[in-house]
Image 1 (spheres, rainbow, N blue to C red):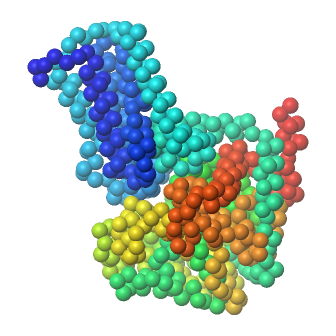
Image 2 (image 1 turned 90 degrees about the vertical axis):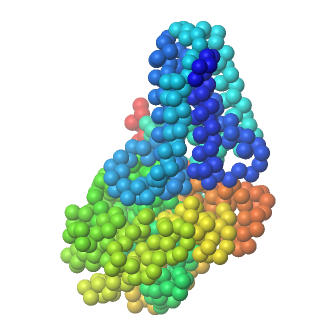
Image 3 (image 1 turned 45 degrees about the horizontal axis):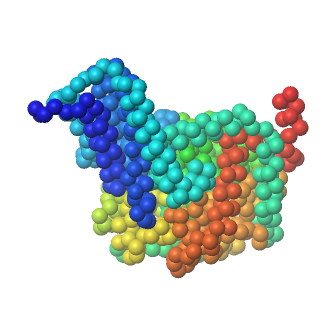
Length: 633
């Protein structure tokens, strides 16, 4: 304390403290795969250039007090940003993007999930702030020059720039075309650093908004050619199989396929859904995958309605809720259907009240349409059994045929239930989340059984087609140790990719056409598959999916992060695996598919970011290029 410290000691202490803390957080809070010494070195140096620059701005202040105030404020802001990413990663296994930060209307409903991801030990994330404050208060600083020499500042920022370019150069060597081809935020954070990643994200989001302003119909030509060249003709046997029936689509919250036809400590987890896998009126898709990103449930809705991918950096429902879309609901409106969505949550959650207008959905039965009280609610709101029972009551008053899409809620993280709804015991792993998950899934399964019985009782069952699919994963990679215990094998990136399989059923009462469909498929294929079953042609639709029943359907499921699954290969964690054995093979085996996945995701992003469907006439299949040019004159 009595020692006299150099003039810029507080600045140096701040940089070193935040640097060490950030590097420590990389290893303790984020599950980033480090494959070699080079990647480890890049991870170590990548926070430094940003910290040198942002803390170095203090050198422009004339007084020591102002410089110290700047350093403290910066340290607090950076600590909040890093901590927010850590909490977000615990739940989503991903990093925050700018659009997510503006989804404030969802924050209240996310309370229970966020609370389950916060721990007392999180005070560590603010260690550097405490160190800086202690240093300012107790260290005796030597010469306190009021003005930092220009030559000193110049040398300082030249050093900062040199470190930044060293970081970028090494990152380019390790991951060529990182900033132009990567859909993987983890790869960006590993190479650029968490702070620089957010600057890059701001740039990307600004570019996205500019794209819409500058877009014209000519950009749709290339996309249209791609869609037409990959179009799949309907299967004659299944086209129109459910014509004129009511369409009931159920989004099964957080349901993954690993629980089906499986037990937990001797307890059958999904007895009703298991029975459907062998039902004569049910198509059971045993190789079906979710393809959602940060938008989670809203992404699955977007995929089903539009056969386009969600965005890599946020939820389309928020960032592009006023775009022009040609949804499945719009097509069914033209066929005389009464289209609606049923979800016992407030209408503004995920911006649904605005987005459903853009999707041309006629009515949204939100929380105000249901009788919700403390006795019939848990976790996020109305329990699934009363939700589905009340939904059937609402359906009885609908004009027919109708298209109702129902979004369940109870089987949602942190998977809490009232005691009377715990139909099986908890699991016994080290993960409370996984332990509760089996109970919550069992409750959902029971609610679906009751739902089918109610449809029969109310006379709606026989003239309906019921589609049920898992919307996204329920158990994140943060629980791999517990999942390894349950499944009895190590959860590698390959196994994790396979665990993204979700159940999908198409139940057509009295059809006798049911069978197991082992074709590899995903949520992007639901729109054309359903419309063809209803006898609606889609040959003029701008969609990236294909009818799963079609002989032209390709077994190629693309994930939002650029990974994919084919009949022969699985690409996950930037590694190519042989599908079936899980053996790692040369990445060249996957390269053709990698390029195609990048291209298709890019086309989807282009449609969304440029709002390009405003330049497309769905009825005629014509591009409105001439009108665009005329309006631009």
